[in-house]
Image 1: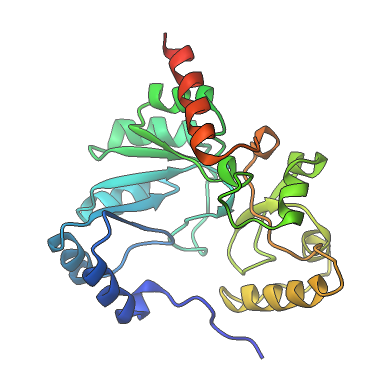
Image 2: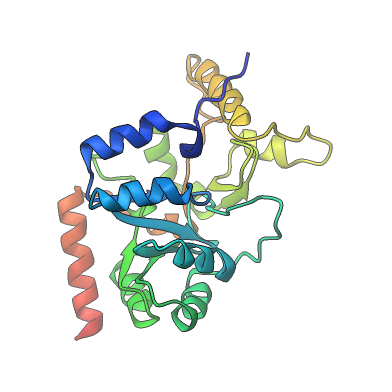
Amino acid sequence: GLNEIYRSFNDDPEMLTLLLELRPAVVSFHFGLPSPHWLTSLRDAGIVLLATATSPDEARQIEEAGLDGIVVQGIEAGGHRGVFSTSVRDERFTTLVLLRLLSMQCSLPLIAAGGIMDGQGIASVLAAGAVAAQMGTAFILCPESAANASYRENLLSARAGETRLTSVFSGRPARGMVNRLVRYGEAEGSPVPADYPLAYDAAKQLNALAATSGCHEFAAQWAGQGAALSRALPAADLVDVLMTELNHVQD
């Protein structure tokens, strides 16, 4: 059977209790916003609150909800697209275009995310109005990440040059490297995936079974469009390189 393996924060009061106990410095929301009451509780605990926007309307909702900053996610980003609703048409703004639009509209700090892989990319988003860059794919090859050998091997291969935004893996749009499951799920006549997160459970079960035979063609290997620029360095060394590149651009 299939299970709802990831509960929405809105349906998880135990998670709220845990956050209020642990009081992390930052809590960042994806796929929308929790209730105003929960936001107030987190804010009163001294937690900095961020949320992802993929459109000007989502950014407006984040600002009206009184959060502290906006993660500006462009279509280039790896992993799940943070759209509030999959029933609303997605304009699929690029990181730089959305950043420029929001810099004219929003008073909150903007954190750019999507396709940023090097110091040159960081410099570009800072110049376009961001106060910071959020990077995911750039750090997957670091030894500190939990990526398995297949994931790392594919990121270092020609596969990194082909990513696709697809709902095949989880039931919600997410960008990852193309493999056998993506090609099958995107083919004409293939069944529509179940809603999130039931489809995710199905894909994870399929991958787990295939992995026992050494096949990793059904794994969700999330990666942004800049995946081919990945570098296999320890995280601290990568940060040093990024800062060197950024300083070189800004000098």
